[in-house]
Image (cartoon, rainbow, N blue to C red; front, top):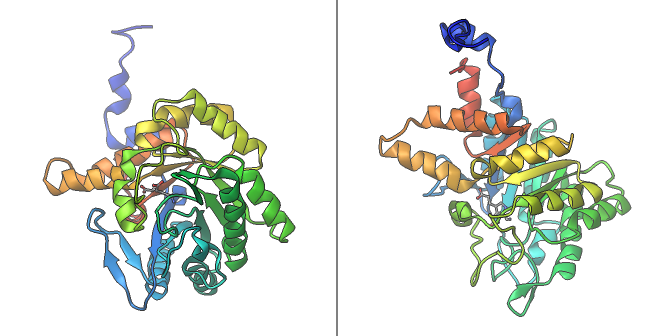
Amino acid sequence: MAFPETRLRRLRRTPVLRRMVRETRLAADDLIYPLFVCPGQGVARPVSSMPGVFQHSVDRLVEAAKEAFDDGIPAVLLFGIPERKDATGSAAWAEDGIVQRALAALKRSLPELVAIADVCFCEYTDHGHCGVLEGETVANDETVANLARQAVSLARAGADVVAPSDMMDGRVGAIRRALDEAGLADAAILSYAAKFASAFYGPFREAAESAPAFGDRRSYQMDPANGREALREVDLDVAEGADMLMVKPALPYLDVVRAVRRRYGHPLVAYQVSGEYAMIHAAAGNGWIDYQRVLMESLLAIRRAGADLIITYGARDAARLLHRGWTE
Ligand code: PBG
């Protein structure tokens, strides 16, 4: 049946009719809120390139997490800004490390909130690369051993989920074995399975104080040109025991999100990264687009492509809009 018998506009006539035939929905349950924890007391230092994002000391972080949980957001993702950095990033596995302290405080005040901890070294090394250097390059296997130590330390401190974002080969399997041997079999792994060497991470590096001192991350993160290779990365992480899979960034990589969705039944997470968030704010700040509508449309598009969950700095804004009945 074709036009004129078929008229697709019939089901677009009224807001309620449109609501009925919507294929994709967004809920606060789908959102994960990233937070940055720094030393000190009573600190909430704004990140200039990301409006609404702060470096929080542990006390303020707990408040921010509580507000997010009250908005209906089930999980936070933690990044740490440590007191000291060194060549290996050893502060990342310190028992009294900054994220370890934040986890303990979160578990005390908000035991139900799901705490996800980023596992990586770029915030902890004095050179800003994601592992131990051998000359100018990151040594894979030595870094993997350290990642496993960091993951165990974070899970012991209370992380429900550890999320390796380093892109070393073999890290998911090594982390799984280390967690199990440490009696932490219940700690889940959300692997940054397909993480691309993206220019969209720019603002994050200001927030996390993690820009590499020289070079870039192209010898460990993926080439933005490679979709088939992304599936091989995902295959390996699945084989090594990842519980949840992530594609990052989100909007420029929706084809990868869709391909992973088709291939696996695992919960699939997409990370709407700092640059994606900053661009929406920058354009809206100039009056060129509407922040709320573009945020919600981008999140819906990420869900439509096949992501179950979305990590976004706009999580609280989105959750509040959904709470007020946003259906546009
Ligand atoms: C690495 C890490 C990065 C992000 C999350 N984990 C930065 C990088 O790879 O350089 C970026 C997230 C964002 O841009 O919002 N620990």
